[in-house]
Structure formats: C-alpha cells, structure tokens
Image (tube, rainbow, N blue to C red; front, side):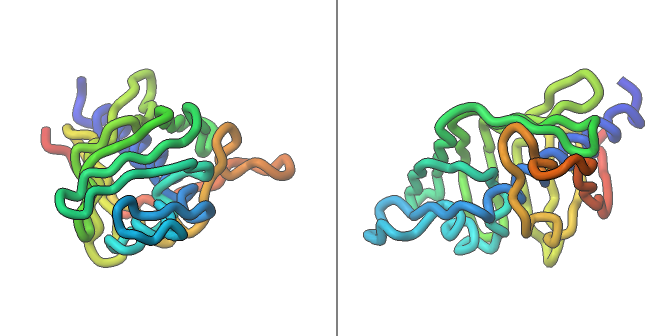
Length: 177
C-alpha cells in the first residue's frame, strides 16, 4: 500500500472518529463506582479532559474502573454514519478501552472506512487544543472545536434538512511508514 493511500485512509478514519466523538457531547453518562448515579459517560470524558463529542448520541450505559481506567460504553446497538459523503464511521454496540487524562488507549469497537478498508481507531490523545487519532499505522490531528456537536447514528450531522454533510477540519496527518 502506498504511503499516500495510507495517509488518505488515516485521514478518513480520523475524520470519522471525529464525527463520532462529536456525537458524545449531546447525551451524558455517569461514572461507575463513583457513587454518583447522575453523572454521565459524557461527563466522565470531560473529567479526563476530553470533549463529550467523542461519543455518538445514544449511549445507554457505561462502566468505568477509576483505579485502572478501563471503561466500556453501551450504545444500545451498532451505530454508523457518513461524513462529507465519502467517509464512514462505525461503532459496535459496545466500545471499550482505557482512559487516563488526555489519552484513550487500546480502543475497541470504533472503526473508519478509508477508501475500501475498515480500520480500527486504537488511540486518541489530546495535546493542547488538538486531538490526535491513531489507526496504528497512521494518525491525524483535529481541532477540539470539531467535537462540540454530536452526530447522530444513521445521519451524522445531516439529520435535519437536505444540506450536505458537515466538514471536519484536519490539522495534520502523520504516518509511521
């Protein structure tokens, strides 16, 4: 696979993940084991310095072990949507991984379609006002302001009216190849 194709695929993956991340901001969840049943998964993300928009709308429950950072979020079903007409993002009904301040690692259940390949998003790191998304072989960065709005499963950002899909601004793209 050529380096330019890998970069393009990574760019697409990151755009899709960005949209999914934006979706999280609209529906809150709580921290498991913190004794506060009113907190939400979205609020938990904010407690680790991530925008709530990293999760799509519709999280029905979550678990978080504060001692290890291991988390699981339930969406009540698989979720997918398109961005800019060519990028597709897919969440399994359950996503998981490990969270620590400014870092989501060992992610499972989130993938992006780049050209004809589905690639797993495995890590997200916040550095200042940028979020870096990694698919392992490549990564891309996006401004935090892309994650203030949450996309909806099925229609992304184009759920009302006939307008085009929202564009996500990419700050940079890097490949380990």
